[in-house]
Amino acid sequence: MESGIKRSEYVDIIFGFLGLFICFALLSIIAILLGDLIITGWPRLTPKFFLSFPSRFPEQAGILSAWVGSLLVIFITAISAVPIGVCAGIYLEEYAPKNWLTNILEINIANLAGVPSIIYGLLALGLFVYMLNFGESILTGGLTLGLMILPIIIMATREAIRTIPQDIREASYACGATKWQTVRWHILPYSMGGILTGMIIGVSRAFGETAPLVTIGALTYIAFLPSSPFEPQFPFISFKWLFDAFTVLPVQIFNWVSRPQKGFHINSAAAAVVLMALALMMNATAIYLRYRIRRKIKW
Amino acid sequence: MPDNLREQKRAVNFSGPGKHLKEKFIEWILFVCALFSVGITISIVVVLFWQGIDFFKVVPIIIFLTGTVWTPLFANPQYGVLPLLVGTLLVTSIAVVVALPIGLVIAIYLSEYANKRLREIIKPVLELLAAIPTVVYGYFALLFVTPLLQKIIPELSGFNALSPGIVMGIMIVPYVSSISEDAMSSVPMYIKEGSYALGATRFQTAIKVVVPASFSGIAAAFIIGVSRAIGETMVVAIAAGMMPNLTVNPLEPIETFTAYIVQISLGDVPHGTLEYSTIFAVGIVLFFITLGLNVVSFFLTRRYRERY
Image 1 (cartoon, chains in turn orange, yellow):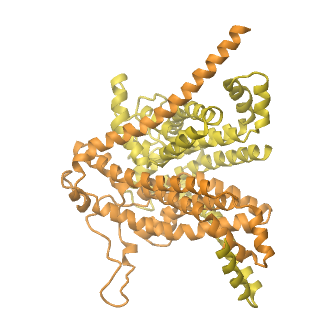
Image 2 (tube, each protein chain N blue to C red):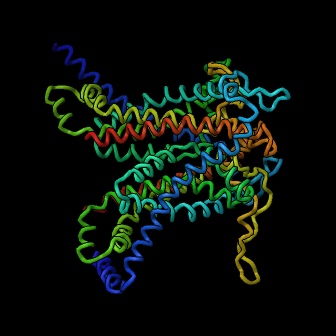
Image 3 (cartoon, each protein chain N blue to C red):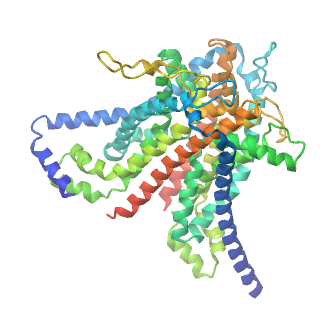
């Protein structure tokens, strides 16, 4: 009896150490991964690397078309997914009646969040490229990723709204506000931080995503920039760039890593450092925001 | 807050007639946005079947599902999807064998052992792990883990199922741990206190009380992990070799559903050919497998949320 208790106490302590050990092992895996990338890619990380187009010669190749493409695609993604996602989130939290339709909407969104990203690529290939004839363009790429991150934004919006206590709504109604006024002047402002966090996480997911863009044919050898959105003549803004071919950072990395030559592997490491730095920065911002909001708001 | 109230008051005063119409209109717009998500699911199904139908007109579904050779690009093409299915399951099993124990230990540690401060360090780190782009994990599998494993297992081929499996396992740890931790934290305190009152240690409480009580949540975490691994693309496309190979030997190159879709997308197979429609046929299989898993995990999650 005595020894049994002793033993279970030992097991208890050992498990505590095991848990701590595994957590730190994971942390060191990130550190090793980052360290390996930085050590391998460092020699290539010069201003020239950011200002050159891809090339057959690894030493001359750069990521200019890739990062410009990434920025433009992400812009389309954000402006297409965020408004719809936030509106859908508001509807489901504030307006939706409890019935079978709402139930279906909820199951559907949970499922969409789990659909493999490459399926969104196939959807875009059939819908945007062949049916709507958008071509293998920046517009297609941005909308594809927009569809992909929509569930993330909806869920983040709902979670942010759910933390607002019922009293706030009741107080607003008591002042004679309508439903929309309550949402507009109370629910939205108070959940803005959470929505912003979800937005950043969604956009950073899209930023690092490769598979759906490979499927719609984001070409990997693009030695030109999309046409400028600004024009010297009236109306000064051109939308031609929406239909230009493009490549993005992750696709460029995939292309380089798949080649047998060592020189391209160094390039892919350097580009991966850039991608990781941006992705981690976005996520760190989101995580920081979330913890600050959680600490600041005490209902 | 006072600012908001003042603004709202102004809004109330100036919203004359037509207020009801405006309210209805806004609700309708929001509803359409929510309905949009159902539209996405319907379009996925429609597009997959519409583009894949050409394939099933030529290849009987029985041959597709039971054939053991997958060589759609050869002169004498064969359309048996089993090599891709087995390849996918092989990588997925390796990933789950890695991710499940690690994820569960972390979840138990976070919910039963770690104090608040430690938890606030570990959880963001796990989130960062989930934020690493998959193509970077692919790089890691091909150029870091495979050479490392080759030092231990010399007969390991340059492309194999083992290395992407392990890397993918690390990749899905955050999903498994965060969902199971969520389930474990939702076990009410009085149940745990009952266990402690009987003299149980933290470990005994975790294994004999918390884990059984949150079992549906842990099962959901497991299923979501499997679903993620099946749908993961870049790691296997880069490191597993793109070789449809009916084998359960993790040391050989293989191909998964997702890697096959990437392989065809990279090549110059013209649209409208039978070869091209294979990616939609494979997509249908992939979509319905993950759909099934996601729906099961949705109901499991809902069950533990409702129980306590």
